[in-house]
Length: 188
Image (cartoon, rainbow, N blue to C red; front, side, top):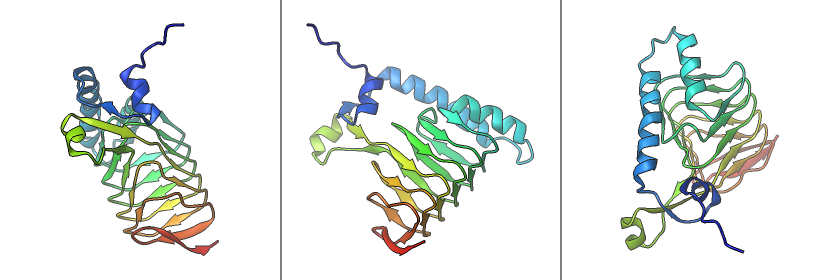
């Protein structure tokens, strides 16, 4: 039986190392980044246009979601929002694979959510190699200002992540966690 070679898009979602310096990837990324640019140029009161642009950009978006501009996204198409999500300004999405955000999530200003990682071997990095791990934020979570969420992290439902935290590992549901690295400090 002949094995089918994975597409670059499949490799991006697989967690395997792949070469990210592909011309077709750049073309698609630039097209999506143009939508991000247009989004960031909208008037604050033009929520209708903002919603149209978000629907063209994101992989999925629920009802009653707000992302305050400016927004930065590597792709946008790999980010999925549930219903009633509120995101304050300066969200950065390094969404080279899936970022899934549940219903009723609140995200403070200046938050970074990253799925892309690079090999420790400098020679591989120079070749453009990277691997991606998805990030999941459970429904009802609150992500404080200035939080950085690293690749592969899952944050449980109803959890609060304190401002300025760097989330390097999974955080369970129904807790308050903060720090660098982020750790559970209190059960709710």
